[in-house]
Length: 211
Image (cartoon, rainbow, N blue to C red; front, side, top):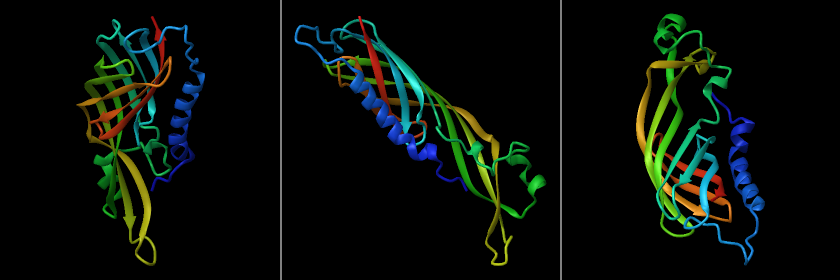
């Protein structure tokens, strides 16, 4: 079975550290300086976009076409950890070939879905510090099946484990996403929301260029 690697254990702290670093890097507003918000200076943002807990690799961009008006957004995300990195995985054959390659001593014990997702949407500021967004997602889901041999030891417990791609159940699909942007500084915006494909909590942090 797949174990919790150091990358998986550190992924959430790394994302939190990224947001904190962006906040610390944001210049402190001066009284004489024009406030940079969704209704005035903010225009183009770029940075990190992911989905918790499984899709923590990604990035995104948004652009507000006029102050306080509609904007467009685009992001890409994928699993931060793949079953293909497990020592039990093999690409020598697929799930269709399991009876021939492994025989009938192996039983299907688990199925894992891995995703690559592209989101395209629109956004609309509601206040100087708050904007909403919604859009559609195009996603590719790759299914990986886990097979395990039973009765391989003296006590009749589990033995060898093999993971293979299930090509017949891997497919392109579509869905929706939505949520909100929250301004946290002169040049920093964070994002939260919902991702339907798969069902995850959308997160993000952006550095925003002014007009």
